[in-house]
Image (cartoon, rainbow, N blue to C red; front, side, top):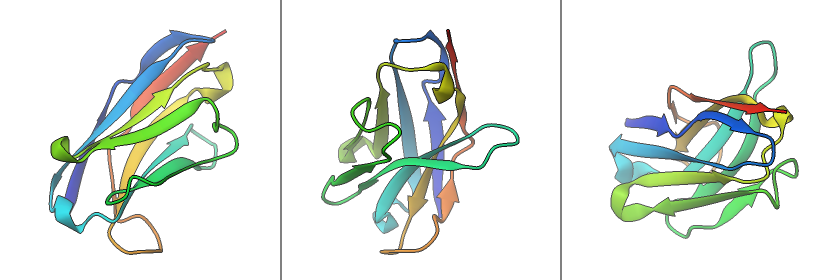
Length: 119
């Protein structure tokens, strides 16, 4: 099992930037892929993107591609989500998740960090 702790959320004006981090601890050697998702109360969860732990290959959802960047620091067991040109519709609780297998559902989730974008 892996423990995930997100940080970096907060309040920002539209057009601003935030960088979220997700620190992993525990059996990090089991991680195949790390992902970011966001969800607001009453809304469906939306996957924002993912990064392959070993290769650093990333994928971003079309809703954030060109504005968000996912990266990782393997030495620190940390994944980052750099969010640029934020818009009010980006307001959500952001979660990171770890997956051990090559496919399927994510196995472990962080507690989430709130991002609020004011207009």
